[in-house]
Structures are given as C-alpha cells and as structure tokens.
Amino acid sequence: MGEREETEWGLDPLDRKIVLATQEGLPLVPEPYRHIAGKLGVTAEEVMERMERMQREGVIRRIGAVPNHYRLGFRGNGMSVWDVTDEEVDHWGRRIGALSFVSHAYHRPRRLPIWRYNLFAMVHGRDRKEVEAKVAIIADMLGEHSRGHEILFSTRILKKTGLRIPSGSGGG
Image 1 (cartoon, rainbow, N blue to C red):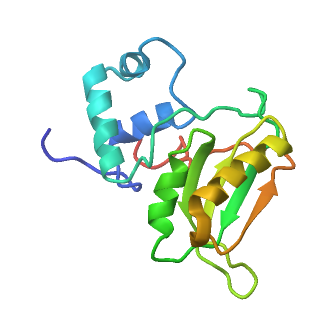
Image 2 (tube, helix red, strand yellow):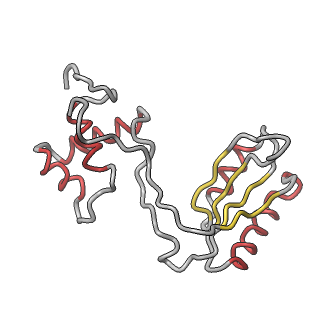
Image 3 (spheres, helix red, strand yellow):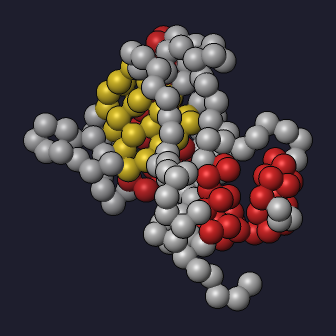
C-alpha cells in the first residue's frame, strides 16, 4: 500500500471516507461492503481489509448489529450491577456476557463509598418480572462470588451511537 498520508484523525483520506460512509451503520443491502466500495471507487476487498485493520488498531471498536430491543418486544430491560472482587471481574464478565439474555457486560470502576458495583450486565426481558428471573440466574451462577447486586431498569429509550467524525473539514 505504500506510505499513508494521515488526516488530523490519524486516518488516511480513504480510511476517513470509509468511516464516514459507515459511521451511521452499514447499508441494509445483500453486499454492504461492495455497496460502500462502489460509492468510493475501490474494491469491496479493500474496504474490508481497511476496516479490519482499523478495528485491530482500535480506530473502529466493533462492528455488529445493534437491535432495538424495545421494538422486538423486550420492554423490561435492566442493567444488572454486581459487586465482585476486582481480581475476578474479567472472568465473571466474560461468563455473564456469554449468556443469551445479556447483550453486553463490562467492568466499570467503583465509586466508593457511594457506588460499590464494578460489573455491569445488560439483561433483556419482555417485562420486569422476566428480567428479575434472569438476574436470579446470574446470581445463582455467581453464588458466593457476588457480594451484592441491583437492577437499574430502563425508563426511556436512548439512541446508542459511537463517536462521530465531522464530514466537513479535516483532510477528507
């Protein structure tokens, strides 16, 4: 590929165009990378290679579907928060995150003395009762490794978006 000229965001001009073309989501077509490539005048393979590289480098954090759980009938969504030892938080986060009813689990710092929880896991259910039953499954799984937990139920829907780069200035 040769030497890459980088913009203010640390991206070369084509990387920046790919990010701009995908930051609102991939197009809902049978071959989204080919569709993007056609608009940018490159091959689908180049788009995929560059996106994989940007993901490896941390420019793109992840590529995945973001379902609207509310529209799918899951209206009792709740963030379960757990107090586990800091030494075990990654282990339990991976195990809990692998459960089919958990969309994501992650480690967050405690804010003692006010907030003792360091493991968060988003649990989805059709209603609050279903979420509570699923959180009970996690509690059983953790057993004595859990030193306490709570469920923070969603009260409104927030649009989830990542960092967006402006399409105007900046080497594009």
